Image (cartoon, rainbow, N blue to C red; front, top):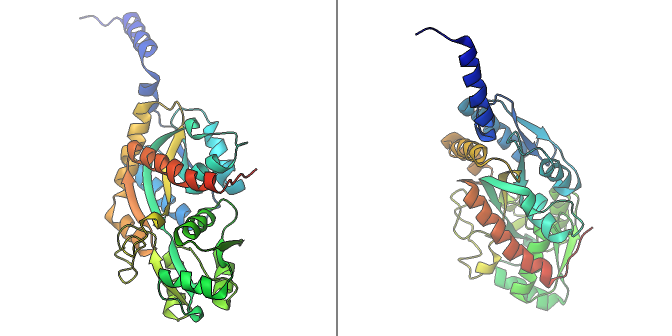
Length: 323
């Protein structure tokens, strides 16, 4: 058969005309950028960069990490919400930057419907810790201590509307005691005051408290998980102690701008889940007190729905509004 160059060109043009945007994007070699709404160098930033490297090899396409910190994650989230929904810009979403900001800030320029869930990545528990010198060994003892002193239990937070702030409100209601939140710029300052007696409670991640517990400066009463964590086998959970309403954690996941083609979401989701399931990476996360949570869009949507119910009730009951 004689090759007809003009006919071949016409056929290619017709194919391109009827090609779907998803097909074109799936074949694109343009980088995928993960926007981290925090500064560089932190624990989560390091994990995300490892995941990006693994996904680059798996997808055969560059996966980059860009830090856009500011305004409790709003800067990074807003950037992605307004990005072109072509699958090349995605957000490392989390409890604070997404769920809590949406619940607490009526003037926010984005909402949950501006994002499409892509994948779950990891979560971290809170701990219920007290200074050793107040003589509290169990959660029940906190009630007796509060009644004995007649003063509110002071607990450290990372600011109004943070997970630690809202968890403290939840705990006060559950125990039926008065509690007072004290905001700190960082966890180190909060621990100094806890050990020094200027606070009675701290809800930091357990890994940051272990050395202080070993030295006898504080005691971790419980972790806010349904089941004991293998890296902290001697620390009971709020559930097993009879407080299932005090189960709480902070999560991180991958989100895309709303309208991103499903084919691109599925492709990136599968690669993310594969990376997060890597045994070596999971071992690293467990070592620093994190819980690997590899999952797809449905899993992240379930987490978002849970946040709206659980944290939404706390925000509504306490009439909290942030600008």
